[in-house]
Amino acid sequence: MVQLHLEVLERCSKETEDTITAESNAFASTPIHYLKDNQGEFIYVECAQFNDIRIDAVALEFDDAFNLYTALFGLKLQKKHGEVIRQYLKDNVKSALGSSSAAFSGQEGLWELNIAFDCIEGFHEKMTITEVCEMLYQFVAQLLSKVEK
Image 1 (tube, rainbow, N blue to C red):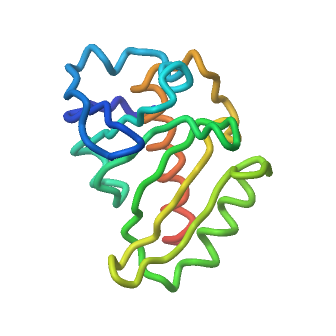
Image 2 (image 1 turned 30 degrees about the vertical axis):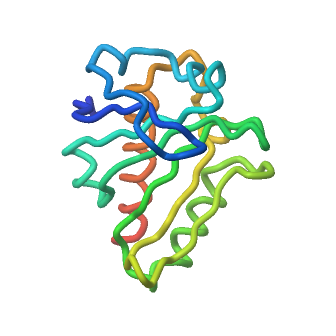
Image 3 (image 1 turned 180 degrees about the horizontal axis):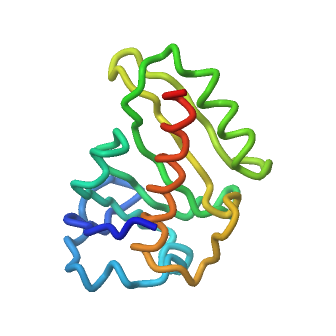
């Protein structure tokens, strides 16, 4: 599995989307259940390696409506890849209410994805923020390999 170096880690308010505080790299070793314990927050993450999988940044949050840990991000792929993206999500994300969504934003020219980690094989809430980001990286890299076929 690829090892990521997370350059930007910010705790943000879900209500206002304002940054509460920029965190040091040490925060990346915090278990993801931090989000369940602090449901008014999301974590904004940037990593240069995300460019390799065509994403800029990721927002990690705990969705209290569905009781799921989620990642929200934009994926720079053309609209024509929608069928492959949706099939990949169907095949690799366990079905649950709120488990995944994919919508193309013509204005942004990218796919807006929302994926519940709880519905991806191997996830557990004791994983660190870095481990969750690495899991997402692998997930998206595999999606891109399907698109490129």
